Image (cartoon, rainbow, N blue to C red; front, side, top):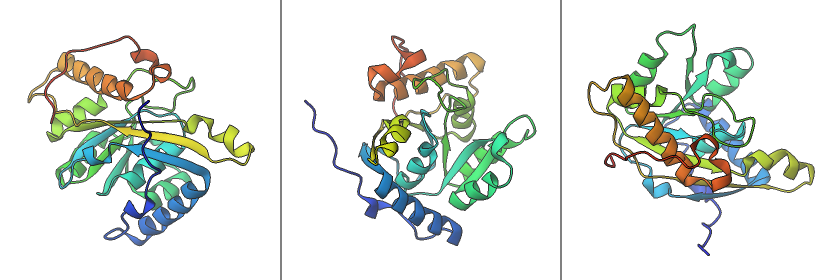
Length: 232
């Protein structure tokens, strides 16, 4: 049986160089996660250093963005649905990280996210678009491919699981066990990629995420495969 990774070392969390609100929110998140979550992380060494990339992951619980925020040492910009662009959620989200709100009322959201990548930030996106109600993966949207193609940056697939049992664990006054796995960076789509190529690339990203998850979580991507391009 493969050895489990050690508990996450919270001393790795970076605070310097961030606005005061972001530093405070990270310290509060660390305190909360130490108390409520038994976090194990595999593959942190696969996160690129000194370059922009898109971090793409599955979405099972409200904890997901907070966990991702602490794991990435660089500046993280979250892609968030516009329904959360209201008080008090807007204040909370912006206290944690820079955000780009996406939806029908913001036609410039893609341009804003590409600009953040061009400036060297990490853009975190949940390609399913919403939290899973079934506990398994749903179909991904091609925004992740559009971002990678426009900014010419790699996509790093990642997954987290176990957090969907948080409420049940906390009711028993127990920490919930959460496992995070980070995969190899995928090279972006080729320049000038059309709709079919972007859809194929989206499938590749989603299958890379699914491949990091146990079989029971793969949902729409169980028993599917796609020819893979080169790594970034």
